[in-house]
Image (cartoon, rainbow, N blue to C red; front, side, top):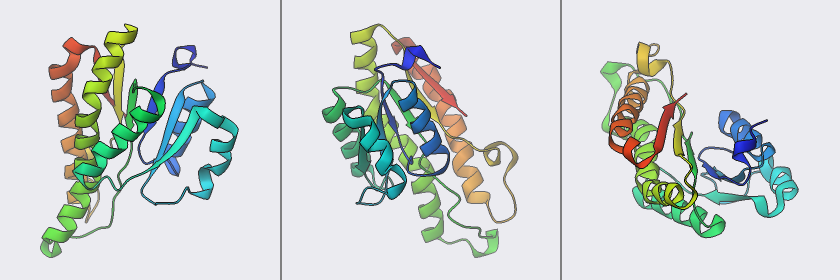
Length: 191
């Protein structure tokens, strides 16, 4: 598998199910030190065996990433546990629900944008100093990899305009961050 991931410190947000869980498991199998993340306070059963098998090479972190301060706490907790951060996989997010334009309200808009945009924005913001420090200490490129959506390019299906906008924002923000942080050898990708 990927030998260059051995010993790399990787935080995967939204990694207790679905895509995030699969990514975290593959990273762990490749030898990375992995931070699993979920929004529930208790360790989900879906990752209990992963944590037991990994021992000191994996940990679970709980945080509601719709609030900026929780994004900071998550990154700081991961860094305190693993001594740094080499890769951020920003996967937390979701559709939340479908609402047509004529029935959208502030509460729904905030819920979708906080989950999909704020979580990626603020975890990345708080990760940058640690990713930069990783590059300086190791000489290896650091990375932020975010889970995008075809909805961000195509507009999504009926009732998903806010979700599509949140993913379009993510695609645009990542392109901007490439321009800002390439000089620091921090790579950005949306998959």
